Length: 337
Picture (tube, rainbow, N blue to C red):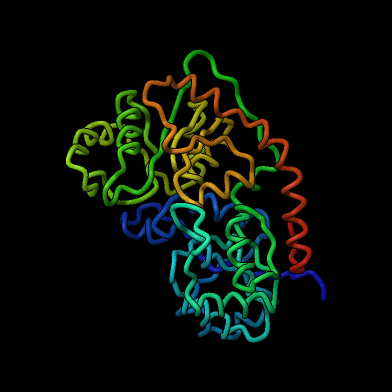
């Protein structure tokens, strides 16, 4: 079988300039961090973008020009989640492969008893009959293997491979720092409040990735962060603007994987505050600098945290992991650019 020359990706890239905020968030899957994910895939595989699910199976003439399909539907699998639309796409494309990129489980810790819905297990087994499944990290790989899904390759996240080479700038004086946080929803844990307090007291620029405002937090004392966020909150639906903004800084700290990856791609050191399986397995795979959430200390200075963010291990691993990604592409007859 020859290399696939026509490979559509299951999301549509659109310009959100001038669109209502709800429309903008809908275009990026409700999280602007997906922009980093999208452009990584676009650079690596140069696919066409098609709308998934409802409209995909209707245009058989358009679909006929493709030899294989990529999907990101399975990058976030909570316990007992099902994916009927992915099943529809698989049924619509006949015997051609639907190749999942960065399949990943989502839970607070490495739960050995992660509950995968039988329909999702069945879907993944159907997928592995046609392709090698790309998974996010070793935890996800182990759980899938335990469920009998073994035609897999750990590839991490395509966003990291957007840069073939990372160059980090050295700071002068106190690190010029940006920060990020999780989605403002529900009740924050004590250490999360401390983290927000730290960012607020230092008046750090805050890069938001989702629509939910801090007022949606259930903690009674979170209203004190509103004035700071109103002044320092930044939201980007365009990676060029995001990149340009980061040129004024040399350090990023927070809980957002893609937010920190974009920072690193612009020469900033980044410290990943880890509190769930998703971020943990990605940072472990890439050898990224981490701070376990419960080890956050509000008394530490930004300079101390900057020192913890040395990218030495990441830079050593990256060429090796790029080779693994190339191996994944070759097994799936994909052209990797």
